[in-house]
Image 1 (cartoon, helix red, strand yellow):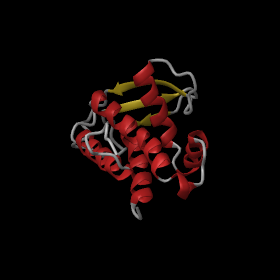
Image 2 (cartoon, rainbow, N blue to C red):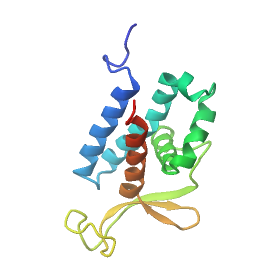
Image 3 (cartoon, rainbow, N blue to C red):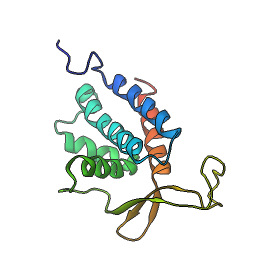
Image 4 (tube, rainbow, N blue to C red):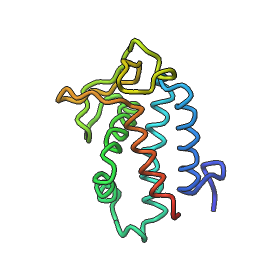
Length: 153
């Protein structure tokens, strides 16, 4: 079989790439560039796992497969929207009801103060209802989801 991915053609290869992207982001968690790459890496894992494990999941359509994942990891919806906005600028079918993203400038560095008791700088995701989320926390939930998913693969 030919490869258009330089020989990295399995869902596990894509998972390992995601973990590497996560590690790179963790070292520089205010980098929008690294956050966008990580969001994309996490979201594209959905497509790769769908293709590789179709018979195991018993879904014919990727949309149905995606919908089956959301109850286990709502944060995947956020990664969907961030990834597609990064690629297309505008979203035609948003999933997470996002309003805005920005870098929140806190009084403390997240490297020195990891507790939520301190106003640390972080990449902020604002939903239309005014809820403000931390990209770091949301991608952490996605990482835990993928770790659980791939533990027996």
